[in-house]
Length: 122
Image (cartoon, rainbow, N blue to C red):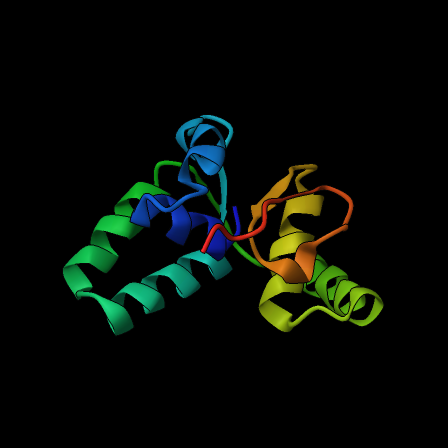
């Protein structure tokens, strides 16, 4: 789950219902530490630390996946091949390492295999 999908879900935005089934399937949900970083930072900057901790608690219902050397190398390769920023390439590499789909509304991922992209409704 990409940060944009998490934030849409937490805000109950126009695409929240699209992401809800994947987010709420906590037995299958993989959560990258990169996503944790981005969502926690967003809440601390734009809302409150208490809300950031609530978001972290919700995200922690899934399996937290840390970045390891293999994912870092894969992400670097993906970044070069697909011209993705660092965080995006780390999210995609994490998903691919676990044979999972990456759910997002970030247009950087449009048209990429193993990604469920939904344009932002805003």
